[in-house]
Image (cartoon, rainbow, N blue to C red; front, side, top):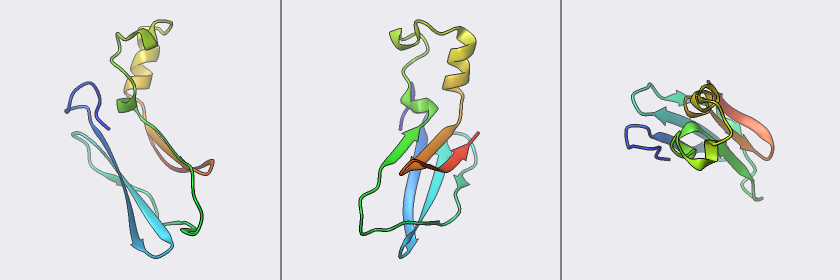
Length: 94
């Protein structure tokens, strides 16, 4: 996921190191990587994965933010990444 510039990039990597388990790694440009614990997953059925992170939002001056204060925009743009699978939070890096 790339933000306004390549220097504002988020990388979310999903690996399956062992059968039936996944591992999430999150890397934000210029920061140390963060990893989840090994997470059990049933590979025989589909799953809904939701990702919310600062690089997914447009530039702070975009119409999307027209009703928000500069402080609110800053909180969103410099916020955390949250990953959910099937409605459960798997990863939340503040």
